[in-house]
Image 1 (cartoon, rainbow, N blue to C red):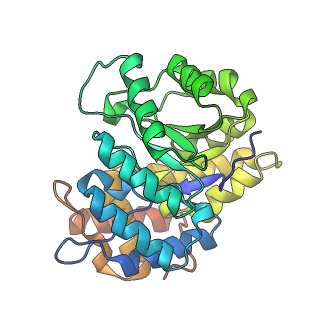
Image 2 (cartoon, rainbow, N blue to C red):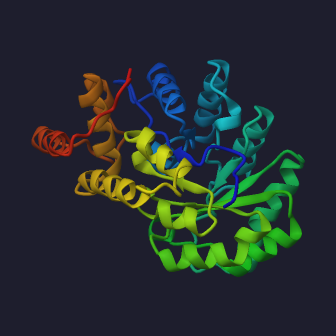
Image 3 (cartoon, one colour):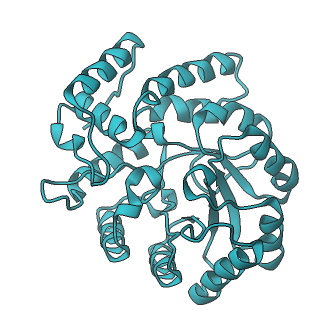
Length: 305
C-alpha cells in the first residue's frame, strides 16, 4: 500500500459563512482543528467547500489566515484547479509558498470534450509557471460534476514529463473499475490514489491505494481514519459497513447542506446551516429527519467545538 505524504483520509472542508455570506474564518479554523485532532487532513477548497462559489483572491486570503492560525501545512491539500490558468497558478503558488504538502487540482472544466493534448498543455503551463520543485500535484478526477475527466493515458504522460511533480489523484468517478485500473497501472510507481468516497476505502487500501478524500470525513472523521490505518484488521469489513451506513444517511439529501446541517445540530450552532447561493439549506423538516436518522444509527461527533 502506498504511504502517502499526507493523511490517508482528508476532508474537503466545508466552509462556514456569516450573515453577509463572507467566510467565517474563526468557525472554519475550529472545524479544521477538530478534523486534525481526528487524524484527518484538510483538502480546503474542495467540492464540498463550495470552492467554485469563491473567488481566487478570497481563497488566498482564507488560506493565509488558516496558516497564520497555526494549522499544519503538512496536512493541507488545498484545491487550486480553476478554469483560468492565472487563478490556478495564483492558488497553487500560494499553497506551495505556505508549505502545503500538495494541491488538489481540477482540470479546467468549462469547455467540454477537450482533448488529452489540451489538458496536458494546461497542467504543463501551470507547472512551468509555478516553477517550484516543492510543488506536488494531486489530480482531481470528478467527471460526474466537471464533465471533464482525466484519462489513464494523460496521467501516464504527466508522470513521464513531471515525475516528481504529479504525486497522486482523487478518483471521484464513482466507478470502482476506474479506480482499480488506476491502482493496477500507477500504484507501483508511487502514484498515490485516493478514492473519492469512503465507500471504496477498504477496497482501495487492499489494492495499494493511499486512502480517501471524502465529503463525510467532515462529520465522521475518526472512524474513517481508523479504517484507513487498520484496513488489515479482522473487523475491517464490519468497519466498512458501518461507514457505508452512516454515509447513506447523508446521501438522501444534497451533500453540502446536509453536512452543514449535521454540524449545526451536533455543535448546537445554527450559524453552520448557511450555504452560498445557488445552494439552498435543508429546511427544518429535512434537518429534523436527518438528525433522527443519524441518532437511530448511533452517530456521534465527539469533541466537536
